[in-house]
Image (tube, rainbow, N blue to C red; front, side, top):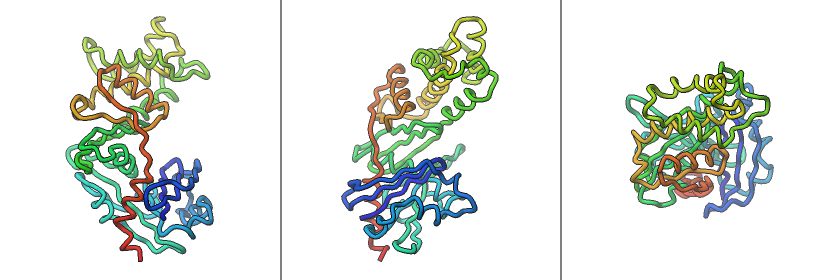
Length: 299
């Protein structure tokens, strides 16, 4: 039995997992690594984890920003192509007060535009689930595109459209016209997608972003569609960029999760004519596979 922890910059999630990858219990808190002051990770972890779990498990595995430079214990990155053997081989084992603490590495891609991820690789592997190959999309503020072949991540890229959209909606020139309480609506979102993909208009998302204001000023778009329109512009730009880099028309495309962002991404891919399947990617099986490879090092 083991404990798998996903401790990101904004949240804490832990699962008690049996050796077959089944989840026996869960604990979730909106307390990310950014909320831990004075690097008191050990004390905060002891507060967040149910007290009896450590008596049942052989080890606790950490993934996410808790293993980053400002986290509890920094680990490096395994360069792609990388699989479970590579992650296990680069894991750092630290003797804990009760059971060993295993800090997992991230995965990197080098090149002109280096890229990294910490924790998302466990979801990507779970989404692929033994397929010969796939492009896995993990939507969010920093959307990850991950290419997997024969159980190895061979490429990855991060698109920051989600964060750009959030910033534009919160404190920008275009945000000043957004009515109080306005949401990301379907009409605005699809309008933004269509604008992002119009080939007869010059420029890209930077050229189009101001239209979130100007279309309203000229009464060509209702103000309550601005939030959705901005989201559509950014997602549309991401997908258009990704098509130039990833085999979205050849390999199976898997969109991870059922969050609002994931559902919108699924809709955008459909409108773009890209066949994609929505998948749930639990990390427990990935933690269990790593545990099986590391258990001999824990004694």
